[in-house]
Image 1 (tube, one colour):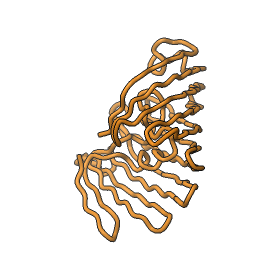
Image 2 (cartoon, rainbow, N blue to C red):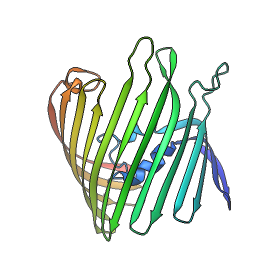
Image 3 (spheres, one colour):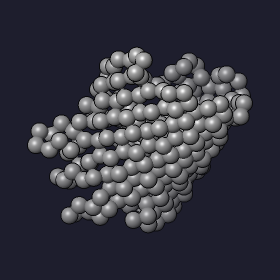
Length: 239
């Protein structure tokens, strides 16, 4: 939970809240994070949520600026477990472009390790059709017991508003692990119906192809299969 205050200066929020990366990239996922357990973007937004976070947001004309500092809470090291981020978006008419940069230290074993993350994207709106896409680059430094970890995500897709309550969409997502020679490619189509502003019924079908370490690493692919197909029907509720 979090609390905040707002006024002519913008807004200032304190507590456990979504990261700036989550807020910015939300606009550039074709499905606006409707399928967090299926597509790879939500868990890849530099932590999704931060604890002990102070976030500042403001709007100036077509520009949206966000910045945050998440305190790590380690008594002997101010930077351990901490995160700092800034995001900027430009929204004008049919065009929405933006990017975000986050620096944090993450716990790997018993060592806090630097992690640099950046992402950018764009969304183009033409009446009932929205095209959206972007890329992420997450780099975690090496430790005495582990090598550098680099994760790249690329994606693109569209949604079509059939009526104010129903929309059809399709997207393609690639996760690349260049340091570990692994790749995951996924295509997804869905039909969603809004019961309210927070609750959505959906049906989706997706096909995922794995290669390299995505097949051999049981943490990444427990079944060890080179590809999989899935169909699901469910309900999403935003809190």
